[in-house]
Length: 63
Image (cartoon, rainbow, N blue to C red; front, side):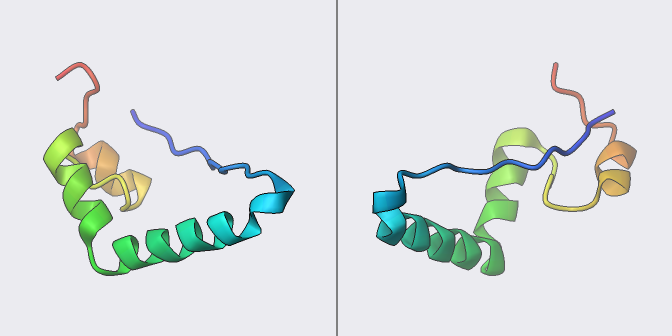
């Protein structure tokens, strides 16, 4: 089974502009489907979907 854990990027407090730009780019990549496509390409499963879907796909890190 696969589990999802929250992940955070930590930036120096003096780099707010960088943090904002990365947040903006991440939202764009998620909204246009790029992140899902990359997940399918490299991991053979869209891990941006819910855990029930992922585990139904019998995702295996060893493959």
